[in-house]
Amino acid sequence: MTRRRRVYEGKAKVLFEGPEPGTLVQYFKDDATAFNGEKKSTVTGKGVLNNRISEHLMTKLSDIGIHNHFIRRLNMREQLIKEVDIIPVEVIVRNVAAGSICKRLGIAEGTPLPRTIVEYCFKSDELNDPIVSEEHITAFGWANPLELDDIMSQTLRVNDFLLGLFTAIGIRLIDFKLEFGRLYDGEEVQIILADEISPDNCRLWDATTDKKLDKDRFRRDLGGVEDAYQEVARRLGIMPESGPGDLKGSTAIQ
Image (cartoon, rainbow, N blue to C red; front, side, top):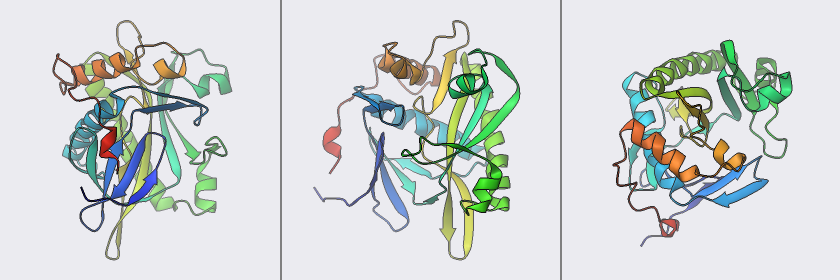
């Protein structure tokens, strides 16, 4: 088996050099982390499920004109993606109060927000991903005003689409995180959606019971993390009732 060059390793994924120029292979790990890596564990099969869920959602978004880095799924744990220059800003979309906004502003968890709130965080584990403003982003050159306008426009479209998609399968989209990158094509630069969309970076609650179907089950020691991710996949119609199949796969990392 040909050994591939590892380009980057994060908490939940590994990026390898792709088979063609301008491509990468994104490998989904079973590692589960929270609180910027302070809490760590392994959830068997999480990588398989996130690979399939993210593939499904990125494909659906591409169908409505939201350009993203996904090209195709290669196997149970890997997908081929476009290589982009990641903008070091996380975009947080909030529809219902949960997580850090409740602590910061004293809002009860589960409170519907008067309108969708979009926040920006500087991508830095060392600094615990601090909240930043558009002024910070443009002043420090992380993105220019036109790029920020593009990011906001795409973010709101993604939110509108995902709200409808999850509502149709009995899931409340509480909040989620997006990342964007610059795709270079000669002298042209395009801002496209990158990273992943999965229960790892979305808060998803059952519409009837408010049962958490996301990584909060790991963060809060609620148990049933794998079952929750499988439930999301089942409702999306991308996993048979028999289960996700081959959940093991660490040997795919080279």
